[in-house]
Image 1 (cartoon, rainbow, N blue to C red):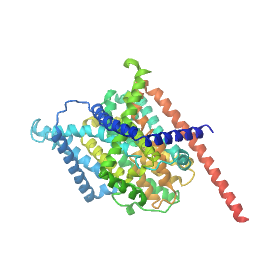
Image 2: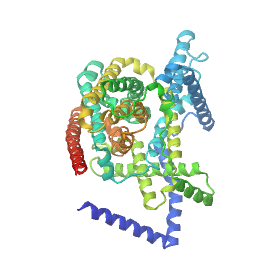
Image 3: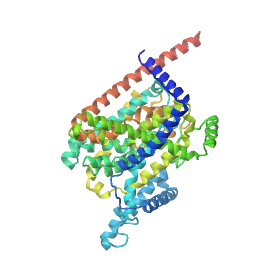
Image 4: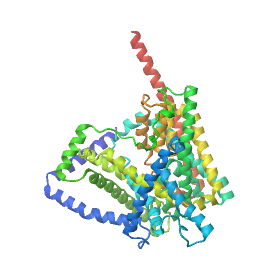
Length: 548
């Protein structure tokens, strides 16, 4: 009773404020001018905050050629993928192949071989790429990951929370349990094995969730956070974990799909892996727009004389700007409360920008919906913008990864990888049928795939067992992201987890994540039984009516 009047009052306030501005053209002009003046200033402040070096060792020409080289590598990766059958069988994205090629041709492999045989300072001792290009590539992930997260919900239909919860609550509980369990397993290993045996800091306990749930983009974007807490090897290990996750996710997922079919756990139409296009990982699922939406946007753009892509980039920048302002506001509040004078506990100041960019995207989408201007955002173009940014992030992150760091920590790396895979597989097999009441295999395999690599992996696995979406798994999987992405899998807790472990110690964070794991498992089991009883009652009622 209390929440509905509050929502209605907010709606009335928003509508009245909008009507007030529309009825006063001078006020609207003033606010627009203020935005045009302060907007670029804020974006410059964001760029300055993101840049760690005010005098980098490269110029704009180096930046230009760095991106030209990056683009060429993506083409090379695409060509190699098309002509190497095993890469197609693994459904590896071309960006991952391109990143591995860049790594092999860089200082870590080719340069190391030349230096070992001909000595330092010789031709190719640094690989094929100059030092300025490598410096630019190392900076790309921390910047472009903000674009990736800003586009996640821009242009998406955001239904009321009640509708989302009704359709996707079992998958929300299952996905949340998988993510919090990765923290529990990782932190427990950090306390029992990684620290005492391998000498890694407690923050290494967050690597499974960051690498597996977050993927390459999140792992690369966390480099600054790991550096701030003194765990410089964290980013390279997280990127390595993401690579293991995406490969093992597909391999194990295919095995599980075949196992589920043979055991009769699937209820949807069957589809063999061979029947799925080899580039399925790279085909972003894009919802078709209604023709009237496209026509309405086109009429508006014709009057503005602006390219559609430029407009979409403007909304991406606005989302990032809002996220940056929110982060600065939270940091300011922290500096006035529990971290006065920098002598307290710094938590919010350690959160990277990209989770807030996601929140900013949601805010922009909601505001445009309230203004009846949501047609201005083209979801297909937003998906492409995010895809390009993600490709650049993956290639540059893999190209600049330090193999020496992974080699020095290979024992810990192997322990984390094996434990993470085992947790996801066992949880899926034993808990998915008990937490997801209907079509548990088709719905759970998507969450399993996402927990091992990226969202595209989950969609790929769902296509294998439910190609025509007869179970509604795709819809529930999409709705689940609204309760999932803002928190884990690259969300707020993912960005803050290394800082929390560093500030409070591993035991309190282990208790927190363990408590959340227990909560979501218990809720998932209860919710599944509740939905099953409701479904049974509905079926019984239907049979009674039919009998009459």
